[in-house]
Length: 309
Image (cartoon, rainbow, N blue to C red; front, top):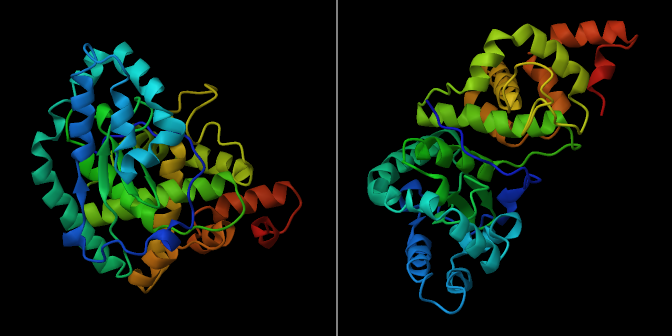
């Protein structure tokens, strides 16, 4: 089972591939950076004796991973200091969580190698283990993948998390902002991550999606072009018993259907990572054709017209 971590809702950085120059093209040379965690605990241990905010140095001398965690997450040294004092015991739970990271690093690099097989152009960014304010489990920027170490109580889900963020790092998805575009980003990352990691996704929203697929397909057709993500990503309206993040499941299903229809599977992976037109990609997957035809007939429109942006 893949653990689902906390992800802050932020605009996705599509087109990140353009900023990847200089990163390793060899999966075995990918960097795992843990020095920021040492700096964090050095600051933590001086909280009671320091006359100044000890986390100022953690931020000032932090890696690009810490710098990338500032906006929306750490905010500044004072914000971090306040949170650490408030949740001191919770931070302590993760103090030794990286003790087994070397074993996980080998596993993650094997996943990187599998991605290299499927997508030879892949770049492998550094993974930075940093400390934030319990508002993000993982994210990525032009500088690499960042893991919020304070959210980890063990390393059971770190492989899946790193794999998912690695796929995001390769993506260059275009098209108008819409629910469809964002669920394709998340769901396709899960689909390719599962393929290269060999770890089956068994999260609650995948189980719910499979059990209620007909109802959800019919509903999704009516909302996919909107910018309102409620009930599909990052939160629900509580109108029924659905879990959060059903959009991951929907995007996975569309990506899976597209992949199965393509004779050239390597090209299919490239296409999934570089979706140019989300509506056309959906059409080529064929997954929702039945439901789109029903919707088009009900709204007196042609099937083909549904796919116009």
